[in-house]
Image (cartoon, rainbow, N blue to C red; front, top):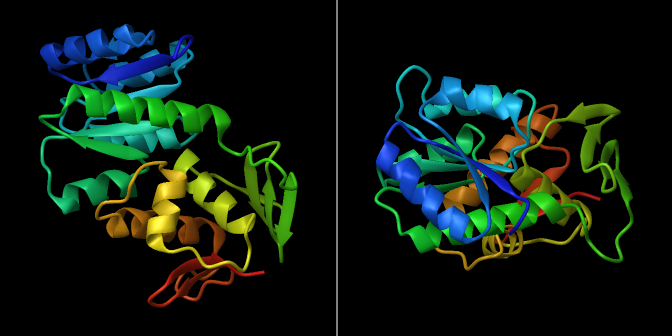
Length: 230
């Protein structure tokens, strides 16, 4: 994990320092910020590969910070939430986060999730044996540029959203269950993954479909899963 830089954003110094210790033990460079405003400044000044972001912070909270980051950057974001309820986890995903960890967290779990996100960030879009340019009735996936377009218009996807689209487009017509999607994209066993996958599917539809309620591309096969229409 050398040559990676992670931005840790939390208003509690003890948490920032603790996370820094564990990340540095993995050879990861750490930059710290105490709120969203400082985080944006650090992000603009440094080459950041991943952000660990607390939700509850003064001045600019994690939700507003994520919105700002997603305006022009696809850096993986892991949300730190003080609550473990599904509604909080779903909110984190809805605002553009790629993963979440609930406080108090197990440091080993956090490090595992950081490593997983960094691997995806560096390698997403690399499927051996697949064409680099795939077109499905105006929906185009360019694996070389890691870009998705709809009728020539670029669509801004998060790394996780891109991975889901790539999985479905490179296997157009094949139905993937929620478990299949989660385990292939998140690269970990699926436990209560339905809400997580559903939130990302909804966000993808909002970005690629003219009418998300009547999707042209990303179809649900009731009781089975999802597929990308050929």
